[in-house]
Length: 252
Image (cartoon, rainbow, N blue to C red; front, side, top):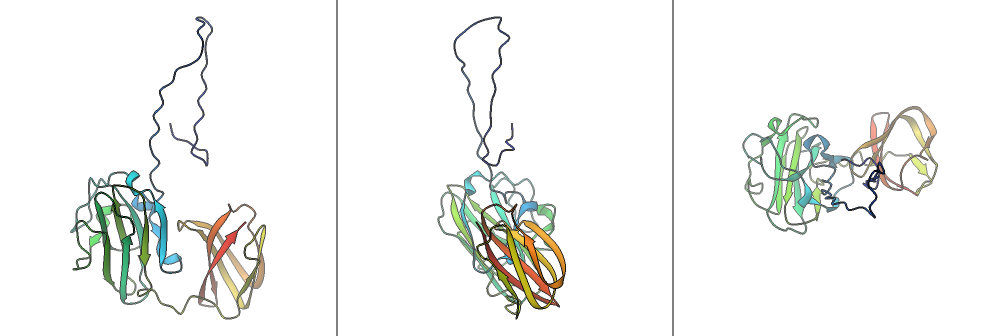
């Protein structure tokens, strides 16, 4: 059985036809751990959507499921890890690390044709002395502007923070838009946004990199209805006349 409840809870109902009367019930139920949300490569967290350095906190890496396919140049089939992705906007380097290594650990970067690969065979191992195809707790890879990358992280012995730092590989000119304002933050039901220039598009992501809202605006100001957003942190990406700004939001 798979739970559809947000808490992951399962409800079991026991029914009797009444033919035999006996007191109580005996049930032996084994619950399997839930894998991390970025367990599958198609659900890789898009870390270039967040301010750097990005920390994925308390990832239950030990409950990731086994990889079935191999990238080119560095095999991982049979291991159980999680996935992250990004596209470099400048030549530089990217770093990643496990803060609490336990059991077998690995941190490996791969290059990709884009950020929408369907399986591991589309990836190519990016060879480097600081990006080893083997056990390790941290890795650094040289990046090229416009190139997409995927990061595989393995830690079989327990949960850990995973830190990915793209500070040296993402351009810094697109962080904010001059004259753009928004309020209130923290927000409840409505977020007001305004800009000196025409706001073309607003996208809101949750902290897993999943797109929650995508609206074309076509005006210098508007209100966004955020009542249905769950309490927590979000990232808002705004496009205005060719400029892109990235802003943190908190929903009460």
